[in-house]
Length: 539
Image (cartoon, helix red, strand yellow):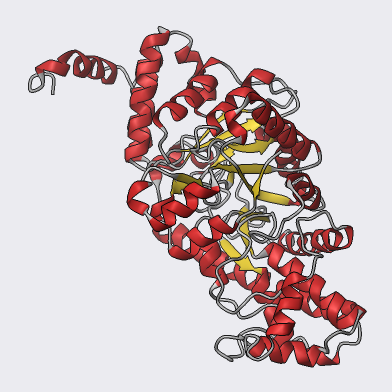
């Protein structure tokens, strides 16, 4: 290339000089470190860069800042072209020491400058995160790229330590996809090993194991719902359906792990993960130090709202009999629009700081995530534990379309289901503080795979320093109350609606989907409607 491209000959010569040293010999500066990193990154299948600002710091410190910035921007272009998943900045060590430094700021600055939907960018925060870094986060979010997603070390690290991971290693966590958690260089903790739609479990409890859409018997029988005399009896049937779904998901995941472990080895990546060489075992077969698993969650808030409605209208007030409700669900409320509207308009919805509903939600999550912790992964050889998480990617709308009508007034096949740990889109009507108060009823240390809360804010809020300060205060409050992850879309309602009508005028409009950002016009019609329906908050 040096000989063929005279205009860039100096650049190519520098690359050639770097590759004469690395990766055979250690890097000496940011240039050689980046060349060595990108070569291995490419050959190993373009896995997430993860804690990039941690492991490149010694080389960045030996390099002229202008040169380092130029190299970083070149990397960013490469990450964008290859659809790189997750690069993480910030965080603290096991003693609470802040690990954020100059390169962490530079990475956020480059992300804001280019405004790409990729790579997915995450920032780890904690009680000792500086005011300056919080400000840089808010400034980056103000550009509308939906990044960085925020992770709370004060919740994630104890959650990992509860799995038996030592504090020093727990503080090396990073994301290996949208927001699934791994330990940098020491683990294979899965990437969406499986998923359970809780709303479908509730459907089976209401139909004694049958699908409302096909009529087929798919799940176990947990009793005729009309025979349950109390809500607790019905809630028990729902829990048994969840337990069956969890067992099924784990069984499928373990079979999948066994197939991949036996037929799809990756020697290069195995050489880069601690434990594999020492054991002589591939990273998919239990070679790493940590081999836990991750089963994700769909339809959490929809399930909570539906259970709350059943408790209120069937058992507490006896407005409807269980037979009437089940019949209406089988017929998608045909001829019972009055019932549907009553269920839909019931004010006790999750996300509005209603204590009885939020406590019910806490029990729904505790039961499911605690159930998963009973199971072991195939790749862990008995030591790997399954944890729960919530990361919806683009599947929220699709999973909603697989569910029949529900007791919260939702029509069959509606894709407008909860896409995060927050409320069903549009149902949180009491402001962002009420929403986070509801979500803080979840014990988020039970989540071992990321637990995502999505919030949408008006662009005008982030246009002022006062608005940014309000967001920072809200985020800090949420994390202090036990929140694990916060993901943010900053966009105006008018812009979203115009983009739906005139997509050709908004091809650069980025929104936060779940654990990642994407261009709004690239999303499915159902997912676009889901995002439009999210409540837009001010502070």
